[in-house]
Image (cartoon, rainbow, N blue to C red):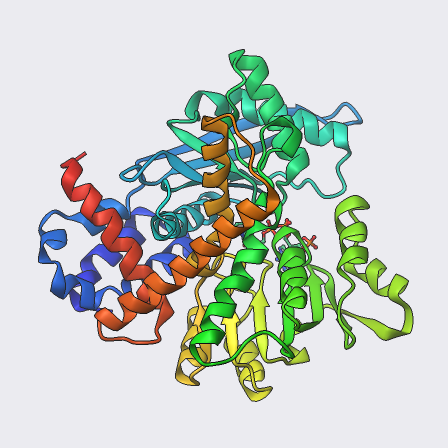
Length: 445
Ligand code: NDP
C-alpha cells in the first residue's frame, strides 16, 4: 500500500472498530491505488478517498415481528447508503444471521466501485440478521412487511433502490414490494429490482450474476487464447448466483464437477444436473445432500470439508465472503487452475488473491466479475421507467455487452497504470477514477 494512504486507512479502522470485513475491503482497494494517486494528485487535495470511505448515511432499524407460535421476535435491519455521486444508491439486501454493520459496509463499499464499472447508478447495501431458513412463508412475509414499514421512508426510485442478495430472492422482494406499495399507495416499480416478470421484473435478472461471472471468466480465458470448452469447473454455493453460473459454464461446454452449501459439497464427475439442483434448492428449499442422494451413485456428498480440494481448471466461488483462503488457493494451483472469477463478494481472502496472482492464474475480482447482477438491475430500472419489457434474448445480449465492456475497462486500465493483466488493480482504479471525477465536479457535499 502507498504510505500516503496509511493515515486514511488508520482513520477508517478507528472510526469503524471491529468491522473486520469492511477493513479488509478498504485495504484491498487501497493496495491497488498507488499508481492512481501519482497520476491524480487532485483527488488527494480534495480528500476524495477520505470521503469515499465514509458512507453518506448509515441506517439501523428495529424489526419486530411475530412468529407462527405467537412469540415476538426482534431483528436488526441495516441500510448503508454509501455514495450517490453517480446516481441513486443501488445494492442488494442480505438476510442472514451473520449480518451486522461491518458486513453491510463492506458490501456497500464494494458495490460503489462495481456500480461505477458498469457505467450504471451507484451503491448502497442493506440487510438484516434475520435467518429465512426454516421459517414458514407466513413468517417471512411478516418479517418483510415489518422491515419495509421502516425502510420505505429511506428508499425510492430516485433515492435508493434495493435488490436481492443472500437470503433475499423473488419471494422476499415480492413481500417487500407489496408492503411498499401498500404504505405509499404508489405502484413505483423502480423502487426495487429483482421483481417477478409479471409485476415489473426483468427477464434475465435472476440469471444475471451467475451468467455474468461466466461471461467475465470467458473474456479472461479468451485473452489467453483459451475458452470454457472442456474445462473442469468448480462452483461453490448452490444459491442464485451458483446455479446460473453452473448452467452457463455447462452451456459453454465445461463440466461443472462440484457445488456446495453451508453443510458440505457434492462431487459429480459427469457434471452437475442443473435442473434437479434448481428443483431441490429453489422449489423445495432443500439441501445439497438431498440432491446427491437423488442422483445416486454418480454423485457423492462430503459433509463439511473444502470444495476446493476437488481441484479443477476454473474455480468460481459463488457462496460468501472469505470462503477461499491461501491454503485452498494452493490446492487449486497444484491442481492446475487457470482462472478464478468471483461470483460472490470478496470470497477469496487477500492472501489467496496474492497466491493466484503470483502463480499467474487469471483472477477476476467480484466487483468486476459479479457486476452482471447490478447491471441487469439497472436494465430493469430502464424498462420500468419506459414501461417496457424486453425479450430474454435482447436483455441477455445487453448483459453480454456490459460484461465484455467491464472486462475491457479492467484490462485497459491495468495496462494504462503499468500493471498489465492485474484485473484487481484495473477494477479498483477504473471504478475509483469514475466516482472521484464525479465527486470533484459536485463539490464538497
Ligand atoms: P443465495 O442465498 O441464493 O445463496 C447463497 C449460497 O451460499 C447458498 O448455497 C448458501 O448455502 C451458501 N452459503 C452462504 N453462507 C455460507 C457459508 N458461510 N459457508 C458456505 N456456504 C454458504 O445468495 P446469492 O447466490 O444471491 O449470493 C451469493 C453471493 O453472491 C454473495 O456473496 C452475494 O453477495 C453475491 N452476489 C449476489 C448477487 C445477486 O444478484 N444475488 C449480485 C452480486 C453478488 P446455505 O443454503 O446452506 O446457506
